[in-house]
Length: 357
Image 1 (cartoon, rainbow, N blue to C red):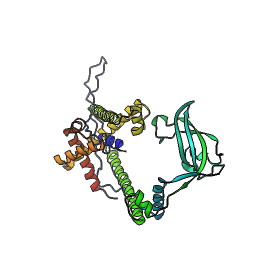
Image 2 (cartoon, helix red, strand yellow; image 1 turned 90 degrees about the vertical axis):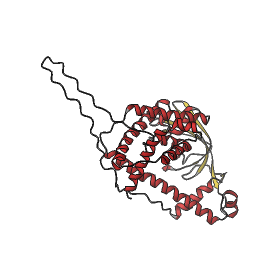
Image 3 (cartoon, rainbow, N blue to C red; image 1 turned 45 degrees about the horizontal axis):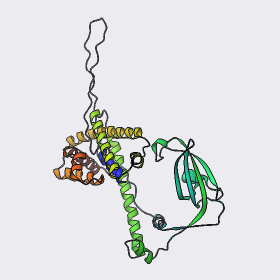
Image 4 (tube, rainbow, N blue to C red; image 1 turned 90 degrees about the horizontal axis):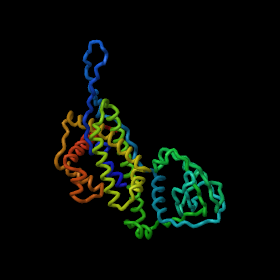
């Protein structure tokens, strides 16, 4: 989603885009209060910073190839958006069925959320409450206890016990529209079934290439950071960029007329202000460490950026954040900050260029 992308640009472009790091200083040791002659202690040495290997990695990249089965499934999923569901006379839910249901989510006797008219696919391998619906009679209410895993969307509920109350209204059958030229011309921008199917395949391949490239780049960035030791963030910079990200979030939530709590859950999956603050602090800390490494690489390799690159970066940030005025651009991404961020991105791109699959 674009909100998340905007936050990534501010606290990132791989956690380095708009941050700059300074090194911490060691503190001098205190002299001993012993009555013996005092020997002056030596200052604690500064942390030793080592870059380690930062270029020339060989990182495998996932294939973007699409099989015939995957292609057909992608076409079917697009058609499902136009499906009509018809109730059946089936009295018991079976594995693989689609059911029309009403779902209530409870915690400790408190109703958290109600989901009306949900079309649920019953699958024992789903890993959630849907796996418990097989074998249950239609027109019944099924109570399913669920422990939220670490990937549960709402961070505040991870590790917590929830109760799902699922009212099974009917087993339904999806009736897909017929894929013919009439459907294609009425619901898409294409004129033939063949052209439409090829477009679906091309989109699927493009999405896979993007995901594969992103994973490849993450693997490289992880190695660069892990190979470097002794880097500590400047706490003032961490605080500055944390506040900058908060300012952006508050502006975006306000522009969209969205409640702050709803915005935090939607963009950050944070269930409370405390979780949000902790998340921003950790992102800012990691970013400050990472960009300190990048700036040393830039100096060692002679990497610089032009004014045009800096300005293009500022405009990209503004577009991603959906804030279109020049006043906001100067407030959120001032020129000096954008210059550092554009340099960090240029360093990453230079590193990627030295690596192979």
